[in-house]
Image 1 (cartoon, rainbow, N blue to C red):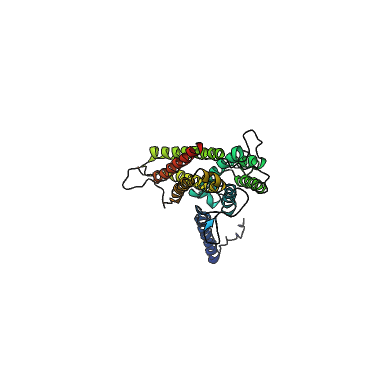
Image 2 (cartoon, rainbow, N blue to C red; image 1 turned 120 degrees about the vertical axis):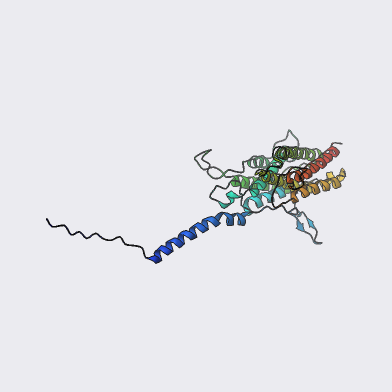
Length: 328
């Protein structure tokens, strides 16, 4: 029997040039993936702690709030929301495939600012934006206070909560900002309340004082439990969340000084108010390259949380002193 003569085709090899192109493309892809996060982080990272934010230069060159008929504190709240949500990317809720998801300090800073804003929005709805406790809550302020309490880490889809899309943090904050804008427009037209009484100012200061006390407890716990640790990965979280809150309160209190100018002058607390703002500004200005949580008495490693806590408590003490004067 004759053997069958079967012609088996030989496997074709890729030309060397094709191999080089494929290998080069793979290398480029790996490099792009490796650079995606660091470059994206550098382009997005922004911690804006400008103490003169929202001020404009007058004819003499001096910085001052713009001439508006509404509330200066509410205007600054609106501008902070616009800056942190629309101008800067809102980073605390970014999923893992965004380069900003790898950021640490900026998300904590933004969360701190929003927390201060949410506290002020509650105070506006409960006290300042209504004539008396028995009067009706302003509808715009009521909606804004609820929207601004929304969690800051909610993205469009969270399978741990629901399989359906949900409202993002940015969407809620933008809606809250629009409610504040509507309120301030109505206030400028004389259609909304903004009670410039000393008892309302006192209640607002007490709310801020209470929150600063809570913040100091967080700092104290971190120092007591982790001071001197070789690696303390939460120290920078505490530092920047606190920095964000203090910056938010600084701008809000600067705006309230303008809104309550007559009360402050009448009670002769303008110098005390400026000292309080100076302490807050000093705390906000702290910006070490690397946050370390050394022992408070260490000669080698600084304790940045201790330094921040000192200015925080100094501002809180000055705030309480102003409150005591308003009580008289």
